Every structure is written in C-alpha cells, then in structure tokens.
Image (cartoon, rainbow over all chains, first blue to last red; front, side, top):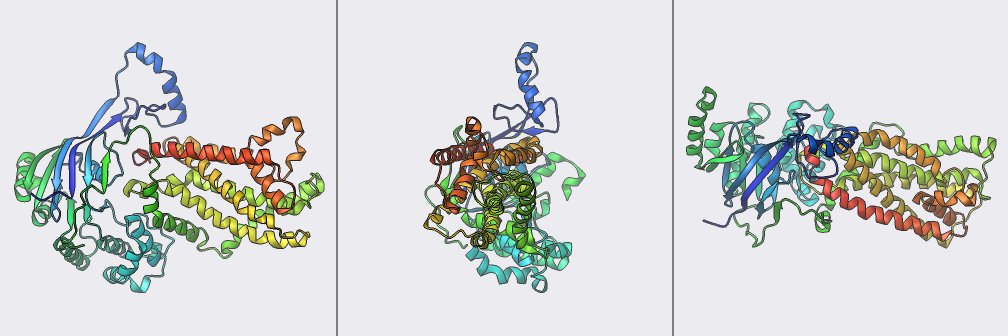
Length: 272
Length: 280
C-alpha cells in the first residue's frame, strides 16, 4: 500500500452535556468557568462547587461523538463516509477541517486540505459577485494569484458574467448557489472534504457539476465524501467507511460497505 | 493538481489535542496573511457601500463632536487646555479616542459577527480582530487629513518630532487589539460582554484626557489617570503635535502596560480559540 495522504489514528471526540441544559453540548476543558451560558450562571456554578461535592451531584453526561476512529486514505482515493444521522460524520469532518479539536488521538495530513462543509462561506450580500469570488476564494484557502488565474473559468462556469458587478444580494438563489459552487469547484488543494455539496441548481447546472466532479476525481485528487445518497457513494467512491455511534463499523469497497449498511439498517429508506 | 504530487516526509499538519500552553503560531499567521488582507478589505468596502457620503463619515464624527464640545466645554464651561486653542486641543484628543473606541467596539464584536466562517473554515482566529482593528486604522488615517489644515490655521508648524506620531498610533492600535481580543473571546461564550462593552467605553471616555487636559486633575489624583494607558498615549500624541515637552513616565507606562496586556490577550485568545466553533 502506498503512503497515505491522510492518516487518522485513535481519533476520539467527547462532548460534555450539562444536566442543566440538555441541548447545550460542548467540550469541557476544566477552565475556571463551568458549562454555563451566562456569566451569572457561571459564577453561581462556581459558587456552588463545594456544595456539589457534599451532595454527591451527578456528573454531567458525556456524548461520545467519535471513539477511536482509525483509517488511512491513499493519494487519489475517493473515500465515502456513510452512516446514520448522529453517527459522528460531521464531527469527523470538522475535526479534519481543524474547526474542532479532538479529545484524544491524532490525524496527519500530508497534503493541503480544503473542506467544503458548505458553499458560499463568507459571502457578503453587499459585495459584488467579483468581490465575493475573491473573498470566498481567500476564505477557502486560495492565494490571490490562484484566484486571478482561475477567475475567468469560475465566472464562465457560474454563468454570471453579466452580473459580476452587482451586489450578490440581488442575485437569484440559483445564481448565488452557482457562483458559490463555481468557486469551490476550482480549488486546487490535494485533498477535498465534501459534505454533500454535490449537484446544486437546476438540471442543466447539476449536469455541469457532475461533469466537474468527474474532472476532479480523474485529476488524481483525494476526496473524502460524506453523503446520505448511497447511490452516489456507490457510483463515485472506491472505498467507504461506515460510521455508527461514533465508531467505524465497516470499511472496504464502497458497494460492500453500502450493502452492509442497508442490511444493518433494515429500513425502507436505506434502499435509496 | 495532478498525480505528480509528491508526498512530503513529514505531515503538513498534525491534528491533535493542544497542549495546555498555547503557542503563538507565527508561521501560521504569516501563511494566512492574504486572508487577513481580504477580511480587512471586506470590512472597509462594506462599511461605506450604499452610502452617499462614503468615507467622509469617518471625519464627520470627530469633527462634529469637536464642534459641540468646543461650544460647551471650550466656551461655556471654559475648560483649560494647556494653552492650546480648545478646538484643536479637542480634535487631537477626539481623533485618537474615536479610533480607540471604534476599534474596541468593532473588535470586541468581531468574532460573533464572523460566526459563519468560524464555524466552517479553519484559519488562525486572531486574524479576525486584527483585520477589524486594521480597517479602523484606515478610518483613523482619514480623520488625520483634517488635522493638518487645522494645525496650520491655528499656527502650528510641522516639526521633526512628528516622526513619533506613528509610534503613538501603532501603540493605540495594539492596545485596542489587546482589549478587543480579550472581550471578543470572552463574548463568544458569555454574551454579557457585548452589553458591558458600550458602557465600559463610555466610562473610559471620561477617564481619559480627551476633552480636558490631565493637568486639570489635581496632582494627588493624577496617578489614577495615569493608570489608564490612554492618558499617556493621548497626552503624548498632543505633546508631539503641539511641540510640548513629553512627559516620560506616563508614556513609558502606556507602552509597558499595553504590551503586557497584548501578550496576555494573545495567550488567552489562543487557548479559547480551540472551542470557538463549539460555542459560536
């Protein structure tokens, strides 16, 4: 096996959720302030700390979003990541995108990683299409020189030349989404992490997107692809991993993992 | 990228739980300098878009404030101004104060205002308050444009000591950045900070020698004023502008305290940065 471009070892992420506020889930770092929302709550939480010890209060619950996840991705591989909602797929992506920190474990990236957790990140409604291309490109990690080089391609792909100097708040939702996708589609990073950003817009544009996606996969770039569309995963990915309850339940060729998932879920919907 | 990409021996990035002590990551900051520039450019563009007056708004605020204060404090109340004509005395103070208060207001809200990108993309978060303060610095530059004609009108000439002015400007910027960083990082988790900030700034205005000289305060109480780094900065700024002798001890304190605060703020910010995306 060739050396991996992404190597994940023992990645674990635990969130603490407070007994007080069940929706508030976050990481406890043992700082001066407990898990609270307002300063008042934090201070009263701290003030009651000695009392809690006496009363033998329950520890807050822990949500194990990811437990000991290990896998490697070869350069040029297209890896599908599937699993039910709440399985930890988004958490895994966010950690690989360096937005969240793992509780323990390690991931090594041997190439530049671009994470597309959403399109149009950072778009500002008052700025023009042209300005937003530069802004969004920079936010996604492109250098100005790269954006300059690919500017015309991006505009052509998005089909917004006439409206390039209009503020994007005037764009139709279709135009907006095409522009956002166009910038994302022209990233030059070696590894792309895609969270179901496939095929947006009308039918014709969707076909363009799929064509572009083909081009990207054939260029030898590495892709981590999270999707609920099992058909897409089977069609596009070489291998896949199945995440359930924060652990990898199955790994291997995409078709095999998808079949296993369908069997394990046993629901009508899994046949999508 | 093509199949000819050569894998490096060492990973480009290692993702793991950070050590308790947060390093500054200067190399990371340098790598993201273009993004810093873009965020600053965005702030400036957006600020004056769809306005008729555009950038002149930056001058109007200190100018109008100066006129109002000149009437009430210069004429009616007759606040002494160290022998400098009150209008320009006040303008010099107001220009610096405007910069500091805008930088702190915007800086302290900057992380929350950029919650979208923080939740979705990685970059060293310090870029956000830094870009906000830098954009405000540009506004400050615009207010200085009016200072030159005002100085000439009142008969103050340019002098070699003006070379010290950028020093005070940068010092103010760094101090505002430190305060902004601390408040914004705190505000991500406890929104109380947002409500406290305007109040804090109001009080700070009266505690600083913006529209009155620090000589107004009796010597026994003056040390209290000098605990405020803005005192040394504003008085120093005025001293250089109007060719007065520089009072070294408040100035030195105004250098030392902001620098120490900046280092502390950077450290706390780096630590808090790890969980921004979870709370924002």
